[in-house]
Image (cartoon, rainbow, N blue to C red):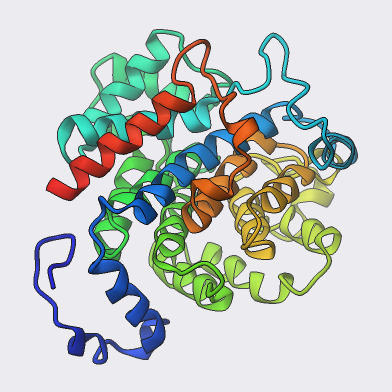
Length: 383
């Protein structure tokens, strides 16, 4: 059979792939079944659409309470999202359905891939600069804005990113489509996730966060619904980012135990992940977490997003609601959770009455986003 990169592999070779890679033979057999189904088939397209629509809807849902306390966000989940009132309120001046920079930049990454017939960080960087220059970004982040200004001034994409110690989640929040591009090629996926991250963020933690989200989406697309192996996902992602940022990998491995903890307990621990001992108590924390919310610091926000998905892998809406309940940077955490969950469960698992209301200031609605996925699938099948 042909792998997506054009190389040949035979089914018997899958048995020779080492278990130390974190994937047992049954999982490799699932991979083989996926490979014999071309990307043009409905199930794969459903997952691609599920990832993009899942991200945009999670983003739109979280945007309503972005920056609010955990208590208010939990009330929003209980009294609005988990009732028939879901979708009745937006974030002024926008109606419900508006998504933010998280999904705008992820969508732009897909547009770049289609236009270039492959991942081109230079083209993507140019499109990021244009998006910011044209004032089309909703809820822009500081690091991405600063990088976009430098890009617009002619700074090469390899040099435009904000340096350490700034480690926000701006690169991770848009990384999901990288997982679509290289679902069966970890080395290529990791390199592309690193490259797209350093356009705006060069801190190793921010780069590692990009790899985690892209990698989680890739693993979700490769797994059969109902057969996700949560511990294998955590181990694989930790292994992929250890060469980039060992401390982040160690923090990520805590999810093994945290998945068995009540969300309230897990939230308390995750909200403090990645910080040095004493930072919060001494007031030297660079990423303050008001009322114990999930801040925009990449380590806790990525961990909470992954926790939310792995806690409810078979239910898109429950996973997104859990992400929102964490408070703080809710548009980003729900967007990342939604992208992973959608890639695993597909578009059919996402609430259609809410999804069809997606909108970006009068453009890029549900139908347009689905058309973009179709263009991506067609381009991917030819590349």
